[in-house]
Image (tube, rainbow, N blue to C red):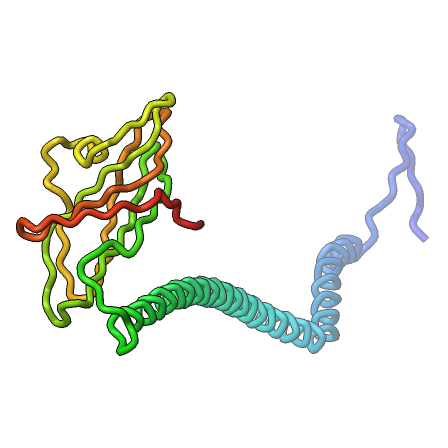
Length: 240
């Protein structure tokens, strides 16, 4: 056992033991080495689990990408179906409107055929040029739309040509008034509306009646090459 010495200053002098420095160096080197060994051991123990986790992570990423792609495809499909349905609805509506228009045309043609059959049929009474009917319908702006139907079945196969004019008789402020064709058309030099048909023809146009005028009769003049024919009909408003 080493002796303890003291000097005059009061400090105790302890002699350095052999191998003390070596133990300290081993301690300083052993601590980091032990940590490295511990980390290597833990990594070795956890290695298979880490590999499995990485594989699961990669699989989840792949599934996520697949689901995102599938969702985008479904969104596109829904948008396409919605657009297709919209186009189908529009086409169906247009088709219904077209069918309605065709039904109206067929009804009008059927009425024309029946009228024609009565006009030129074997039992139909033969008549020369005349006005079958005259109807008027109010328009926006105060004008009136007229529809006149001219007929003839006396000269079968012949073409009847000429010009049509009419005057409207009525009352203005209690006074009988006649509005001639030029005033109705607001054109004094209007020669009349041409017609050319074999059995019947419908003439249409617009006239203007002055404010406060009450129409009562329509006097139609058909001028076919110098032979003028005049017919008087009551003022009739076309049904809605």
